[in-house]
Length: 487
Image (cartoon, rainbow, N blue to C red; front, side, top):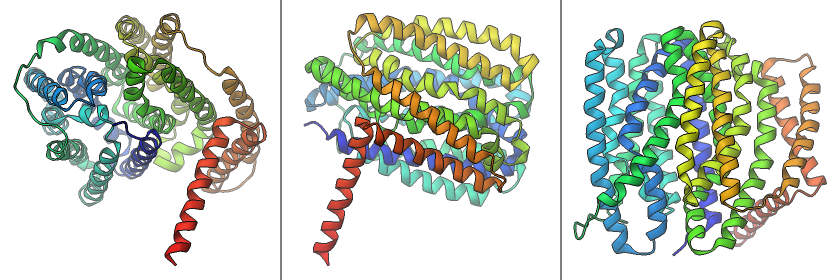
C-alpha cells in the first residue's frame, strides 16, 4: 500500500523544520559559550570521525532505501532483506570501530584529546543500530518525524543544563553523539512492528558488490565534502575551522529548507522508475519546479544578509565568517539542484556508476585547491575549493544522466525564478540602506524580501506557488469548518 505523497511531504516538512530550528538554536547558544576555538575543536573531531562513520555505514543508508522501496509490498522479502543488510551492517561497523581505535592510538589521541575523540567516536558504535533505511524505504515518515523531534527536545534541554562554559566542549561533543544514538535506539525498539529477522534462504552476498560500489561513491563524496575541515585542521587554526564550520552549518540549514519536499522523492522515484515510467518523469519535473521556486531566492537572500546574519546569530567573534558565508552561497544552488537531478536521479534510475568517477575527480581537484589556497586564505580558501569541486562533480553527473535518462523539465520555472529573485534582491538592498538596529534590519529584510518574492510569483501565476497557496488555504478552511462543528 502506497503512502500518501502529500502526507509524506507534510511530515517531511515538519521533520525538516525541526532539523532547521534545533541546530539553529544550538548554534546560537554554543557559539557564545565555546567561541570560535571551541567550536573548531569539536568540528575538527567530528569531521575525522565522519570518515569512519561513512566506512561503517558502507552505503546502506542509500542502498537500503532503494531496495526496501522495491519490495515494500512483500512482507516476506522485507524481512529477508532486513536480515541480510543488518548482518552486513554489523560486520562493517565492527571493522570501522576497530580501525578508529587503532588510528586514535597510533596518533596519541591527537594532542591527547582522548576524551573529545572518544565522545565523537561513540557515533561509530551507534551505527550498529542504524536502520533508518528501513523506515525511509517503507516511507514511514510519520514515525521518523515524531522520533526526531522528541530526541531533539531532550538533547537541547541537556545542552542548556550541562554546557555552560568554554571548557565544556567535550560534553557538547558527547551530547551530540548521544542524540544520534537516541534516534537509533528508538528505531530498534519500534522496528519489531514493521520488520522481523528471517534467517531462511539468506543471500547477503548479492548485496556486497553494489554496496561496495555505493560505499566507494559515498566515501569519495565524503572526502571532497569533509577534506576542507581536515586540511584546515592541518594547515590553519581552530578559529578558522570554527568560522568555516559555522558558515557551512548556516548554508546547510538553508539547503535543508530547499530539500524539504524533494528529500522524500527517492523511494517514490525508484518505485516509479520500475513500475510507472510516466509518473517518474512527472514527479521529477515537479521536484525541479519546487527547487526553482526555493533555491535561487534563498541563495541570493542569504548572500545579501550574510555579514549581518553571522553577527546577529553567533556574535561579534564570528564576524570574519560573513565573507565565508557569502562564498558558500553558490553551494545552495549547486547542491540544491544536484540533490534531485544528480544524486536522486542516478540512484532511482540505476545509473549510480557515474557517481564514483565524478566524486573521485572532484576529490582530487578539492585537495589540490585546498593545498594551494588554505595557507593563503584560511577558511575562505577552503570554501573556494569546496564550491569548485561541488560544481565539477554535479556537472559531470548531470551531463551523463541527461543522456541516459531522457527527461524534459519546465525551464520557464527557472527563468521566472531568476527574474523574481532579482526584483526581490532590489527590495532587500533598499531595506539594507535604512539606518535601523541590526535585528530590526534583518527581520525587515527577510520578511520584505520573502513577501516581495511571493507577490511576484502570484502575479506571474507561478503554478507551484499557486498550488501551495491553494492547498494551505484548503487546509485552513477545513480547520475552520471543523472548529465551527465542535463549537
